[in-house]
Length: 116
Length: 117
Image 1 (spheres, each protein chain N blue to C red):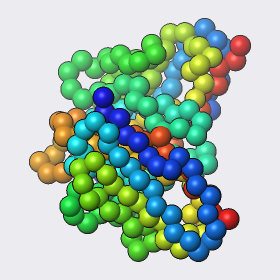
Image 2 (cartoon, rainbow over the protein chains, first blue to last red; image 1 turned 90 degrees about the vertical axis):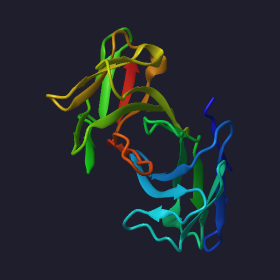
Image 3 (cartoon, each protein chain N blue to C red; image 1 turned 45 degrees about the vertical axis):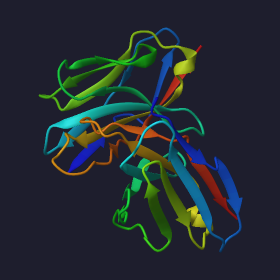
C-alpha cells in the first residue's frame, strides 16, 4: 500500500515552454502533498507544500508564478513549470502524507526534467 | 526549526563489512527521524523511522538505527554490507505532529555508499 506515482518519469522540452508533472496517490487519500527538487549529487530541497483545496505554500526563494501547483483532489497534485529555462532542469520528486500521527511521507519515483 | 547533518558525503566499505552512516539532527521540538535510500534516477524508499517507543529501530534490508537523544544522533548501521546496498542514503527529520497540518521533511545532504567487492 501507500504507492505514489509520477508522470511523466522524464521529459525534455524547449526553453520557454511549459511542462506539467502529475503526482498521484494510488491507494490512499493524501490531504497534503509536497514537491521537492533535487539537483545532481545534492539533497532534496522542499519547494512547496500542497493541501487539497487550498493554495500551496511555497518555500522562500521559490517563484509561485513559475512553479504552479494545483491540488484539486485528495489523490492528485500537479506541478507546472512555466516558461521553462535550462536552469530549471532538475529531478522533481513529490511525496504524499498519510493522515497518521507520524508525518510519514511516501515518495513518488521522480520526474527528470531537461530543458534545452 | 530543524536541521540534519550527515557526516561524510561518501563512504566506502568492503562487501561483508560493517556499514555505519552518521546522522546528527537539531530540533526545537521532539523529532521524528527517518532514513531513506535512493537508487540512481529513482525516488526515495523508506528504510526505517523513529517516532516513539524503542530507540533502536529495525528497517528493511537488514538496516537498523538507534535514536540517541543525548547525542542528538540517529546513525544507520548494517552488520554486513552487500553489493546491492550501494546507493545514496538520506537522513531526514520532521517535528512530532503538531496540532495543525503536516510538516515537510528536512533532509540531510546525503551519503553515497560504495561497496567494494
